[in-house]
Length: 131
Image (cartoon, rainbow, N blue to C red; front, side, top):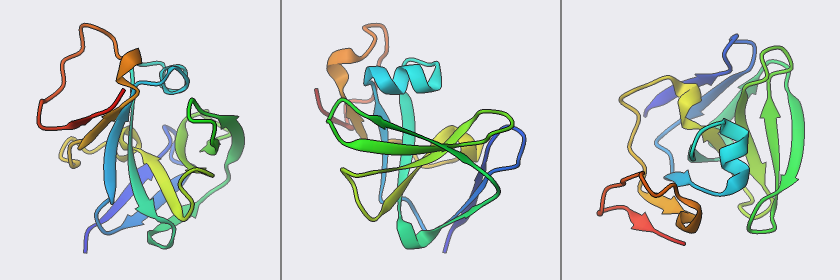
């Protein structure tokens, strides 16, 4: 079984995952763009029972473009968002792929909210694409 660790920038908030993610995706919604400071967010979804969270975190709840509320956990010291849970996807924890700091992490299979995708960004054709 694959075990991975994701952390905030300062290392005070640590997420341990067991097994492979059930989904790795890219999201182009405006909320993800603002949350990451990038042109998209990339995340990996794990079953709740495959995730252990260590350290202190703060929480920020926000409704996404789908209308579902997500509760984001971020480090109170360095401010990095590491994971979140969404009312729209109960029973799962979503972890920011960048928090794993692993260039060998599995690639995304899905790209969502592509109507908000930056026009210069190219993605593989073999991915699932959703507007």
